[in-house]
Length: 324
Image 1 (cartoon, rainbow, N blue to C red):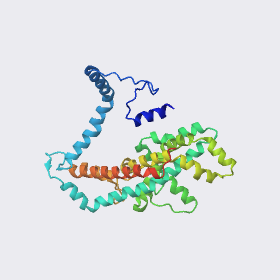
Image 2 (image 1 turned 120 degrees about the vertical axis):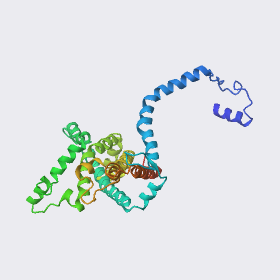
Image 3 (image 1 turned 60 degrees about the horizontal axis):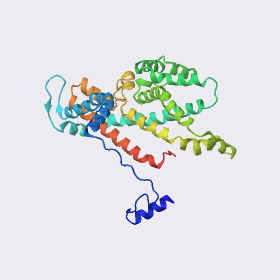
Image 4 (image 1 turned 180 degrees about the vertical axis):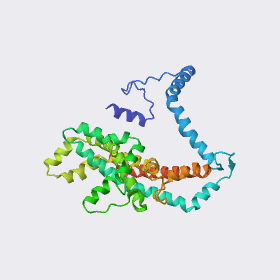
């Protein structure tokens, strides 16, 4: 009734007194003095400073510096020489730039499905009433907090072409193991395998949190209606897990484009440049060839690619991510 009278009042121009139409009178918000506004602004700035200072010093500052260095020719020793956009033109016409981007995409295409499917399988298993599941969750998460140097040494030992554990086991069954990190055809798959193993725990934790947010009543109702395990997985679990899946895909793609530690520790970009990725190329241009300008330009090209891919994902999420 009040809403109806309010609509009538709006129709007549809102000129009727609020007491006449039965609507409570509005109390004007107290105006802040100039001194109170300054105090409020200073309080907000004080709360923002702890986050803003590191952001400016370690993120925005280096980005601006890299943008300026990308417009110069600099070998880290002599003064920088202004060359404008020449570094970008050199990189865009250099076949090596396309090679390192293709190797990076190769890594992502192999890594992303492996780490997602593996993490999902572990998360589903650990979401059941499994004995010792708390301990298993810790065990699976342990590689995430392990240094990449340690992980790389372990996997180099496991995948050693001559006396590694994997090839020894394969030889027991009469299968000749490949030259994992020494063969150009197998070097990148060995890095993908090690990376997926290390990151399974992180993906498992995210997806497990998503699984535990799903209403068990929906799954039970589907079970009562006769839906099998696969039907419940594809019709209920995966659609309701789509926000967690979206987060995992975005983070994994960003990390995939920046892959470096495992490549540097396991193969150093070899053999024969078969595992040379973008960040490895940035490192080599800077510290091996003394081309900090080209390295900075390549880092900005990588930033633009990551930004474009992330924007496409965010815009495309409306079609498949279910937040309801």
